[in-house]
Image (cartoon, rainbow, N blue to C red; front, side, top):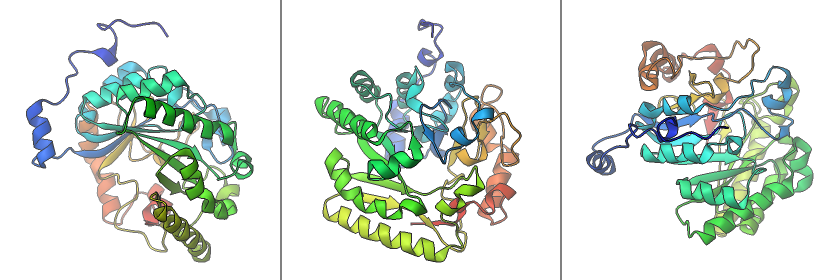
Length: 352
């Protein structure tokens, strides 16, 4: 990528000024609330792993590989100013973006807390230090098992040992910089086939110095063959077994001073989707706004589940989010009259 000067680099545009001191004080006092809790941004759809369950692998022939352009990211400024958190990750490995740390800096300038989720494969001493210096507050490393056997079976290209080495490397940089404000998490995928692997989480967390793990399940199924590894709302016995495993694991972790969080579906939908589209938005690498990551998988193929409500390069992203069409989507979900793509989505049925 060519080097850009401060006058031509959208990420260094001096006109993008953060909230003033009085706005910050009003936010801290609770007198002013930002419109969004989270803006999730797909900074890239490139990925160096080939996870068996991921649409990036299964749909590789139609996958759209692209980095978010600096101009596109900078155009999100109005939305960043009204977002509590910017989560920089979508259907790709975020640390592959050559301007990732500059994107973190811009979101911090807007007053956001900033997080990301990574497979850790491109982590290095320099990158770890740069990410910390940029101002990130949470970084999660993805795992799909607590042993090399189970993890590597489904996460090809993201070797278990390399992921753990990346966690240790980042922890070393964090300690060197005394970056006590930066939280390091494990983003753990539990499938039906490796359900009992979750038992090893507390010991693994202690080994790599992580005090928080967030356990997720397969919510998006690009191939019907993966349905058996997911937890559908009607599969009550399977869910009960998983809940027991998770509760026992969380209890052991708590005794060690650590936290394990997880949500599992219940038979009936809740009053709000776990993705919280009423207080969040997803923006893909081309600048398109969608309710969540599941409503916009980056393929060139037609997708009946794709929902796009506008593009930040054409209109103010905050106004797109407030537009009647997008607001109508959220209203239908809140009133239990959801769009077709949401009716059977596990995220509507999630419970802690």
